[in-house]
Length: 394
Ligand SMILES: NC(=O)C1=CN([C@@H]2O[C@H](COP(=O)(O)OP(=O)(O)OC[C@H]3O[C@@H](n4cnc5c(N)ncnc54)[C@H](OP(=O)(O)O)[C@@H]3O)[C@@H](O)[C@H]2O)C=CC1
Ligand SMILES: CC(=O)[C@@H](O)[C@H](O)COP(=O)(O)O
Ligand SMILES: [Mn+2]
Image (tube, rainbow, N blue to C red; front, side, top):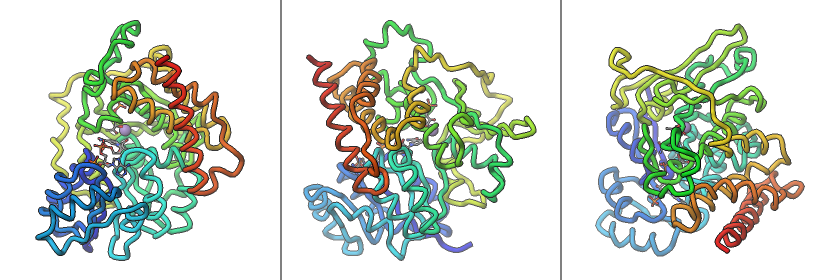
């Protein structure tokens, strides 16, 4: 067992904090080399005091200056800022493992840098694959990176598959991603227009950041995860299915060619998938309470109600559409969720913004071939989504 030197992109978030919690349990295995955040200066400063990383990144100049001031007595930590700083720490020669835990498309550039530098890349940042799937997977192959899923469903599928990826296609008939159904699974759909941000982020099973929590409530999270699975496991979209499982104990399933079903179960605690990714192919203690099925509530499953969750179908629609459509969907959704959290649109209008943006913003030929092209497409889609929101607000 050799020491893994780790960079955590988005270390102040829910996945970032859980990653540090797992690392703290295994000081002989992991060393923190670089940390990053975007706005929470005090939280990143506190992490730097605890972990003494060689580098800390705040992309914004103002936040970076505040962090430098907070760490003036910590000369061992160099504070970096600017457009390329995240990509720089993701590709450092003294980093072995990158935990990609930034939320949204902002994580794509550093993920590509880590992939091209051949890192062990632990991917929580699903939006990076939704935006840049083909480019991302090419970068992984060309850079010789080891891509390991952190998203609980994809970690579950990965744990049910043989280690040798060459056997995956022969092994899998299809996969079933489980979905909790979020806080509004049983709410009268006629009242969804009234729900508040506080109600939407109150996930029944998982403690997560605000954006992904709203995505769970609309089931856009599962739409993003279908697209994520398409790239991670090289599956055509019709081989990816979704089933509601309100208890979030069965994290996902693989239905094999012989009809046998493999599933991974655990308590809903992200330290499980994070520890699996950090230690793979070994397993280490993670701090999550062990699953005790003799005390668990009954496990239940139900089909998705497409009328209640219209956003889910957009996964298959965009995967069947022009290349780049998934990037448009992601951008629209990021803008719509931010507007909902700011109380500028209603919860049920998130889907209207996503569907409307897909209708009005078409990817141009070749735009998905490069990071610059994808960022241009992302920017156009965000502008189109903002126009939809302005129209909705009348
Ligand atoms: N939370 C969970 O349990 C799960 C999360 N995921 C995925 O993992 C990712 C992270 O989720 P989560 O931890 O919940 O999110 P959080 O919002 O809790 O944390 C996001 C992190 O990214 C940083 N960040 C935000 N915006 C930017 C930006 N523009 N540039 C650079 N850094 C930025 C934040 O910094 P700051 O704190 O300063 O704002 C923070 O460190 C998401 O893609 C999510 O879908 C997947 C499965 C489960
Ligand atoms: C923990 C995790 O992986 C989340 O993506 C979770 O799956 C969200 O729950 P939903 O099933 O409600 O989207
Ligand atoms: Mn998930």
